[in-house]
Image (cartoon, rainbow, N blue to C red; front, side, top):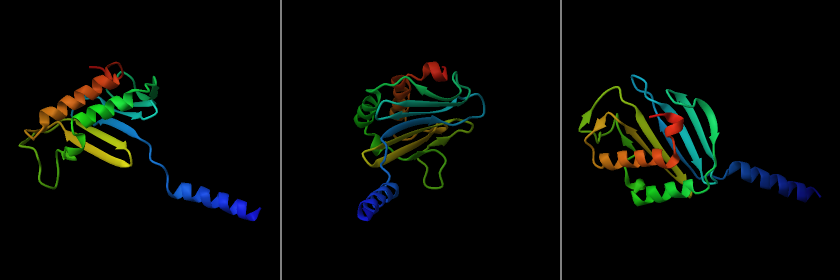
Length: 157
């Protein structure tokens, strides 16, 4: 009996020490000098969607949106077709070499993050960073994700 209890305890401790990762895509925006929407949306692989409207959004606070079992895979397909993993991690203010040919102040940022298949990729895009390689492509991806997730009625615009 003691060995069974010990086995169960060791198994529980091993689970706590090595938590499983959850596949999730996150899109968030940061404030600007003005009324830019500030929000975060998380789309989980099981279809659960959580929206947090922080400022200047139609829906404020944390809300669970209608479940969409296909959305996560549609996002994965979009990101795969755009070679998401090959984008730089940071398009904006940086202590390292900046990709920006011009930098304008008082703009919001968009942060795209994908945790999938035990890997994580995050892209920080400051919208005052202008003239970098693949700029238009990144903006099209952001706009497409906004439409794909159906954020217009929650964010506005």
